[in-house]
Amino acid sequence: MPTQDTQAPPTAPAHPSPAPTPGPAPAAPAAPAGSPEPADDGRSDARSAGYGAVFAVREFRRVFAAHLCSLLGVVVSELALTVLVYDLTGSPLLSSLTFALGFLPYLLGGTLLAGVADRIPPRRVLVGCDLICALCVSLMVLPSTPVAALLLLRCAVAAVAPVFQGTRIATLADILGEGELFVLGRSLLRIVTQSTLVAGFGVGGLLLTVLTPRGAIAVTAATFVGSALILRFGTARRPARAAAGDPRQGVRGTWGILKDRRIRALMLLFWVPPLFAVVPEALVAPYTAAIGAGGVAVGLLMGALPLGTVVGELFAGSALSARTRSRIVVPLLLTGFLPFLVYGLRPGLALAALALVVAGAASAYTLGLDAWFVAAVPEDRRGRAMTLMSAGMMTVQGLGMAGAGLAAEFVPVHLVVAGTGVLATVCVPLLVLELRRAGRAA
Image 1 (tube, helix red, strand yellow):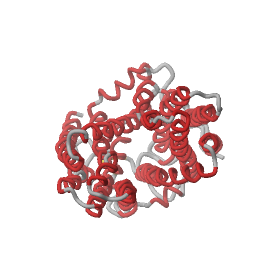
Image 2 (image 1 turned 135 degrees about the horizontal axis):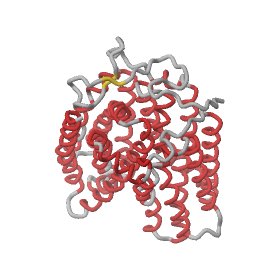
Image 3 (image 1 turned 135 degrees about the vertical axis):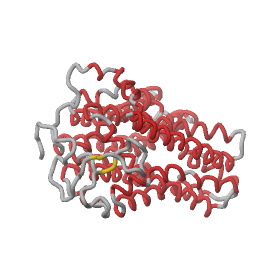
Image 4 (image 1 turned 30 degrees about the vertical axis):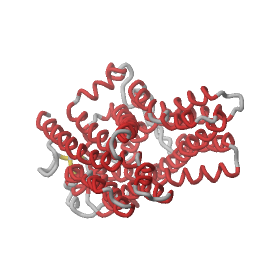
């Protein structure tokens, strides 16, 4: 059990590993100005060290296990709580509101609580967030808890989520360094998130066949406690990143991050593409109804984009070098939404699913973008920046879903998705241009 008191250097793994973690160097001409690429250590054009090198780091394996526990807890509790609220009220609106409340508090928690990720030692933040979630879901189990309190407790879980996620991302840089291993570690957590979302709903459905909704929620309390125990006894103790009394660590510090033109441009590249990417998924049910497909089609189209995402990230992480991943960021960003244009033809199930798989695979740009972002953010503000980035991504996805539904009230569904492809293909190049200008200004 690691118990070291000193923080690991930001450019080297906290534990020995079989793969190097080169620090960032100035960008090559193929990348936007100011966007770092991995240093050329003589092997930068070789294939990636691979995900096995990440799992060779013992502390990462423990973070990964804790991630699985807490993620399953979130997914199963969301499903069980939705069923519980419907059983208590008979209201589809209140039942669906439990999912919406998973997005809305992200903005509040990500802005007001972002400084916690840097002011308090990271292990304490992670364990504390897990225990808060465990307490909230435990209170949901009590038969005397009214519906209004259930929704407030759901908000509390969602409010601490961006702090937990931002702190965990920043801690990955402490554990794996800022280079190749960090990028692959981030990628692994994204891949397992996509996979667990599907598996988690399946597990939740099975639990609800043998347990009451409150019983299923009680099981998730144990998953949060399990995650807290793994993090407490399986990860190293590190000091807070920011010095006590640092004036940049108040709420103003969050806006101070966004005032940095380079960081702001990179942040927008994390935020804006997901705003558009959720549209086909949000409109799966009405689209399958419009083309006369059955219920199975809903599941196929819902899984197509995540499947493409997993395939794209696995290929980029295992087959491409760090330098190549950096060079494909811009091309993938510029072309990633073109498959949405296929919806303009009102395609059948097979072609629509193929378009979504291809669009999902284009999200492999995030591996290179992760490397640029961690190199651009000062180490003492990294937790705050990662928290803000996570909160923004979840918030814009909620807005994207709501906007898609609103647009589909007035425009045919297939044209909404195709129009989203056009709008994204116009907007994303403007963000890339802003990143180039920010690099020149820096």
